[in-house]
Length: 234
Image (cartoon, rainbow, N blue to C red; front, top):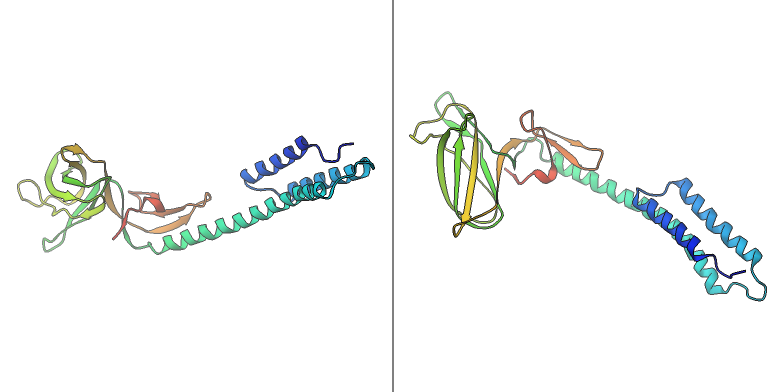
């Protein structure tokens, strides 16, 4: 009889163990079954080996290493699961610090309100530029798409920038209270630069999700966003 376990069988068992690892980990029963299969094959081989050609020490060591591989995979899964849980807990803790904070997230909404004494308050407008721009402009429109005002902001560096709207229309009057939209255009040397508009929102609460992500509740208008959607904290 051959002095080593059939390599195709061993490869099949190892492939099954690796597949289980990638699919979310070996269960205790699966791990025990794989170990038992290895041990059964090894013991059977020892009982039926050719006395004139017994298994060499290095071959025995190789077979035992195969068995230890299964145990190692199970332990690795446990370690990865623990590390993942710690990372998720850390992300949740980090996100809770944002409750009550104003943040800039993808969107194009700006709010305007006037106080009793006529003071005008608007929510910040933000932009994320993919590259430096020598010309940046913002156009504010109402719900009907009518242009309220257009501002030239000049040159800006790449990255996230935020600024304020004074709340005035093109004729210098203060716009009515309410919600408006805006669009941003940017160029460098006459060539368009990639732009993402950002609007202001308040973080109301944090909810861990089943997939390990963290969802931030920004209210009824903006709904929930992921932690990675936060571009700037104000």
